[in-house]
Length: 336
Image (tube, rainbow, N blue to C red; front, side, top):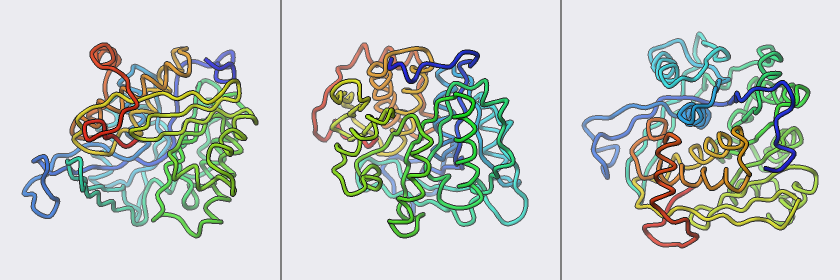
């Protein structure tokens, strides 16, 4: 494991995840379209919610930093997260107009439509006065998902948690999680992201997301520059696997586990949960990324997101039964 990700003395193995959690609805029949379905199944969703559940499945002590509406949808998400073993000490309940996010997602690998309702989202109401230095002094990692940066007061709150984490010597991971429809013009978006990048130890994203903060350079040149400044960068390239930049040696390419996938979403959240869980356990970075790739493959081969997150035993059995590869092809399709 790269030295810069080793825990500081006095920090336990806990992880805090900051960002959105919501309710997901899936057509009860695979391969169906939303407009034709007669019934839906439910699950917890949202990038931070999924990552938190994924970490809990790994046996990691994990807490969520977010906000939920005080209505039935917010209570649904709260109860599901509690049942999954996620600590909700830092999840506020918001009164009034803000609502917990709702996503409708088809369960099919091609032409899959996902409709997300995030008008006046409750999770964007977290405030900087909720920063808990005591919790950060114990935590090993703080994971921040990029959607928390799209608006105030969440943006300032996320940056405040990151600053406090750095002060407490907890490692900060930024999942870029860029959704173009949520952001203003490109220059303003890049400037906001760069504030968060400056406070991060690890950056995780795909080509589109890293291109946003490339600053006119090629993605590889920009990631090499970030790595030379002391950051670890993990570039996710779907069926082409991942590339890890540490600045300690040449970028390392790590493949995927080809699977017949049910749907193209959820893999990135499973990937990050797997990576952080294994880093928290002391694994080498490349081994942690391999575990994340296996977790991603498992999730895209199952219905749902949070409910599809695998346990360590399931991941171990999967790795033993499958070969890692960088091959392309219909059966190797997955989106990290």
